[in-house]
Image (cartoon, rainbow, N blue to C red; front, side):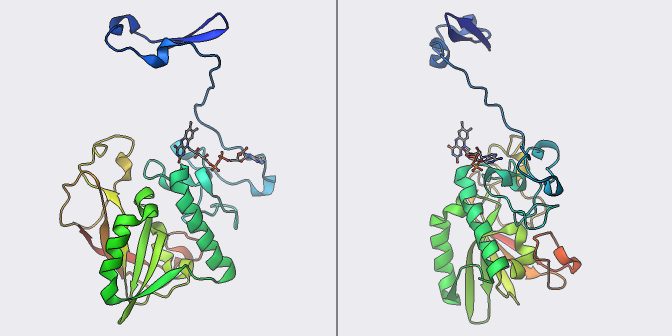
Length: 267
Ligand SMILES: Cc1cc2nc3c(=O)[nH]c(=O)nc-3n(C[C@H](O)[C@H](O)[C@H](O)COP(=O)(O)OP(=O)(O)OC[C@H]3O[C@@H](n4cnc5c(N)ncnc54)[C@H](O)[C@@H]3O)c2cc1C
């Protein structure tokens, strides 16, 4: 593509335009433009920070984002949290956290994490009889916008007790190892996690920009031939000891523990 200035305006000339003339009338290239705005990305501007708290940035393709832990906290500056497109290092080319339609849910998750961390307010929850769980899952499957937009990132967590179940909506799944400290809810037995993911035959699976989005090492599942969104449920059992630091690091606190999937079930 070439931009040619002519009479104070800019004309777009497409390479091989003459070959295609008549085949495709390209409206975007037909009329001249008054102004062209170059919008080809951004660099992180850290001038707002004192030099003692300059946040580390990500690496490689993520170098324009601050490096953060799954609880949205800077990896090198304690109690410095990020919201908005700045948090996209956690789900770069995996989910929608770089865009308003995605980070409106992760920002709410950050608020809930900070409510728990700073004010001891547990993650909002509903207590259900175990007989109500299936209905609730079905309703959430059909209506939950945060799970739908932040696929693979946010998941509903159901803490299964003997006679009831505690339902937590849209928890960052990377925080499952620290579920109890992050949410303020005890989970002594089992949890079920429902999150959305693309099926293996989704058109981008083979190597498009979303190719890295597909979870590796998930347990074998019942059926994998869908090419659209679908909700997997993973039943999880506690692995190793309890624990995990409140900082959202994987295995934080060095005590191991957390929740590993014992099986994944799709419908
Ligand atoms: C062309 C285009 C189309 C898009 N379409 C969509 C869409 O359809 N749907 C969607 O969900 N997303 C869309 N996005 C993405 C979305 O707009 C951005 O992800 C979103 O605006 C980022 O919001 P933010 O609050 O994280 O950052 P920003 O909107 O960039 O806000 C950061 C603010 O901080 C201010 N600031 C920076 N440095 C300082 C400082 N030192 N002191 C004080 N203030 C400072 C800036 O001036 C700015 O106002 C689109 C983006 C573009 C460019």
